[in-house]
Image (cartoon, rainbow, N blue to C red; front, top):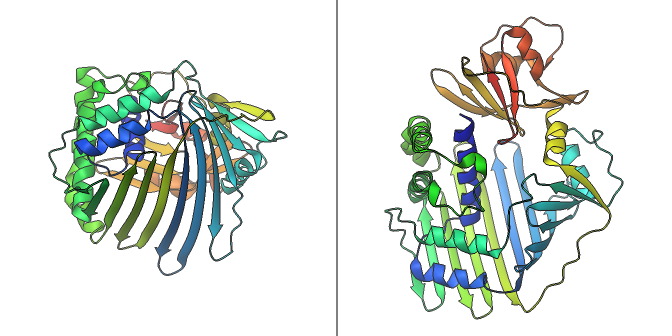
Amino acid sequence: MKKVLVVMLLVASMLTMVGFAPAEASYWEELKTMYEWDAMEGDVTLNLTVVVPPDLDQQYKVHMYSETNLKDFISYTEMHIEDVAGLQHIPTIKAYTQGSNLYINREAMLALLAAMGKEEALDIPEAYVMLQSNQNNMDMNANILKDMIAFIEEMDLGIDLGMTQEGNVYTLTLESDELIDLLDAYIQYVITNIDQLPAGFMPPEATLTEEEKQEVLQSYNTFLAPHKEMAKAFIQGSFYHQVSTFEDDAYNEKATLAIKTPMGQVDMESTSTSKRLTSSNIQLPTSVMTITEEELTHLLTGGLTQTSAETSNMELKAVIGLEGDYVKLAEEVEAGKLQLHLVNKRAHITMADASKLLDLEIAASEDLLAIKDLENYGFYVIWQDATNTIEIYQ
């Protein structure tokens, strides 16, 4: 189960990187040349609208500037997010990356902790927080990106997406059914060919034997694939439109994504430009507080730690993510979202959520229950560091 979750997270992260671009040979040949540049700068303007009747109607304007040294694999990004209604103040986000390490400015980190109800859990005297990866031995460089694009270029999803080309302009439009078909074909292709991924991109936890690969495919085909037609109906009317223009030293893109559901709608319009730079001299912050992955995990989960106790004779009942997303594994798989609370640096959920998630009848005077205290009711709780999830067994 652990490797299944790791692989699914890897597939999701790849999709974020790839977007909806198809394996159009000439398109990828153009795109690959960008990663032969010594450096680049990017500018993105984005308008985002989220509407969930009857009460939620939020609009945001986002502007993001970035500079990347592709030789040393160091980058700087500055993001400004404006709530159009003026009801929220969102601090400017400033971030650096060096290899697999991430630096975030103190103001943005404090805002994130406050949004999670954990603003008092960490004192940050320095100007930046560096989230130090435990995979520092990974050789992160532009070759990994080029190798990944080469992998994508070889994809044969068996779907004609209808990308058109006029000179140096590429246009792609996908309707809701095509979005689901593309996502389904993409996931199955990546799982089937996961051993062909660049070694530097794939974490050791995702290395699969042939038997494990079949287990992942079976899990996908059992729990997700059967709901494909339902998903098409759920987002009927959604679409994605992208126009990409390649110049000698620049890449321009305009994109529109509209996701329509019976519960609400998300609309996003973006305009982005990437320009070639002859050089880049990004200076990393000097006032830095370092937090390792293990320390961040301990902070966000309120002290849950992984244990080596045997779970082979137990049945996995539920998996909870750091944002409260959960999967309940019963006769029918149920996915949803609950609220995680941090009390005395321990992760808690409400009694009502615990009862619903685990089919429990709990009589208690308190409304909140520490997740670790579920072990008092015959469950076994562990933290999976590789997937940033809480697993509950019985």
